[in-house]
Length: 285
Length: 310
Image (cartoon, rainbow over all chains, first blue to last red; front, side, top):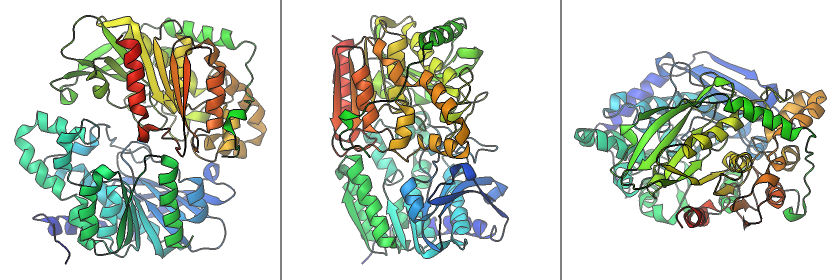
């Protein structure tokens, strides 16, 4: 029996976001080849389209040379100003979209995210929390990506941090998911145990806005992957450090789809190799 | 990686005959610009243990760049100090945890990083090949100087003991650590450089297909006729050519499976470091993390404390 961990107002909050994103369907999408980033195995493109609120978004879109459609990776943005060009091996095998959400470089017309700062941008109220729009950016980009003829949507993986889990939940037709870190998972509980950013941003905010604690907790609960887990049908791999297991295990237990957890060794080559092999095997690359 | 024995790699970097003159001239031009620091408290990031400030200072070409500065609230006497220099794509981390260990700590944001990108914003990818065929206008000229001036700023603060200032960083931060340790030889007390980038650059681009070095491959594919000019310019900026002047105790860590900064180039630059008090930490099965996930952070903390707090 799966546990339902939905906070109050969760469904209505995200339905509103889904509706706003749906309204963008059919909007203009500009895809242009980017010769300087194209190589012998794949062709790179720039992708430009609007997110909610008319915000201009940018993504890298790479396609292997040869006949598609190809297995595909939707790389959700990490926590930082720079989104990289998809990695050589990945783009050789998969069609890849790497989104720059609003505020990240190349999607920073009118708004530049701060680091530190983004994690608490717009708190305490959920309606103004910046990450609402960031999630919407991911959903919009995912729609653009999966509509491309080069993409085999039956072999699509959402990849990245929390945003991959949230995207896979709100686009439940996503067949695969790889999540390597979850900043929003039990964030209010975990933050006081660390001084490391980005969670330290929550400590900074709490120290300077002590009266907002309850509202902040309610807002962040809307972004906790645990709340999204029952909607995730994707076959999934979650990787974590052994010390994070107590937070990650409930997510796997609550997911609708089949998933497993692998502990990271702390040796980057081994950990990366495990993740890449899983993607290549599961997606048949 | 293409080489089964990274220790046996020989760098193809050539030291230009006027290398020292070029950097003496660049340093002189930089030092002619007063730092003119603006220091503003940042209450949001300050804690009961640590005060945090945002600092803007002037650097090469008169450009104003930023850094974070943190210091322990309960401090007596001149403080030991640590300069942190950033990686290529990441934003400079807040130095609060370093300050909590009892150091005055600056985390530098050279030109192009957020808060320092109003005038110069080469982008990522972009910085590595920004004006790469023009020695005087290459993007890293000012960027390097911004790191050096961050050291000068830190060492010159009233509360800092200028005899006890260290530099640390990984990846591009590893490169900048080596650079500052060379151009401020005799003033840097100790240094820790991880997975150093910008070393044997043209060789590295042949050893890996990962960014940022892939920028070199992208560029030479687009402009094959510029390869020779690019190679000659990069020799002026290759960290391999700076490190013979490093005189301080120094530790270097590399991942033996690093696909971003090939370990071959790390071994080569370590071998070229002039200091006799140096130690290399190679980590099996590590990539660009270079041991950070298996305890190297504690090695760095102990090493710096041994030289700055003894």
